[in-house]
Length: 107
Image 1 (cartoon, one colour):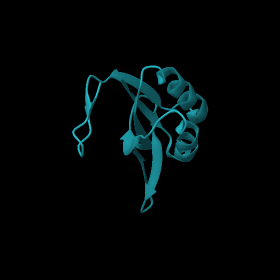
Image 2 (spheres, one colour):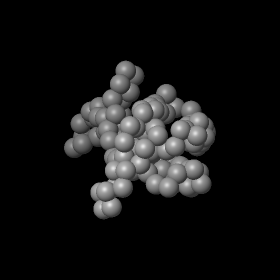
Image 3 (cartoon, rainbow, N blue to C red):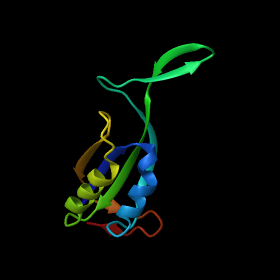
Image 4 (cartoon, rainbow, N blue to C red):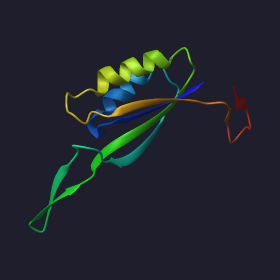
């Protein structure tokens, strides 16, 4: 099993959920703020302009290894906006997964 972590624009969430529905049984969404070279978001507060972190979403998707390429292809196709800060995808191996309610272990 693999954990696919995707950092995307918040405006793309609904499109991603619709596109990923046939390939995954569920996912977890976290609201995050991102920062990196060349990234800046200008905000105005009481007449003072300042630079702040960009709002982003982190999607955690646990998938069987056979679906990883399909999930990545769909996320890249759906989440692309053409901006410099489109996001990123990380794939991490998952050794064990337990269900809290039943104690069932996925391998």
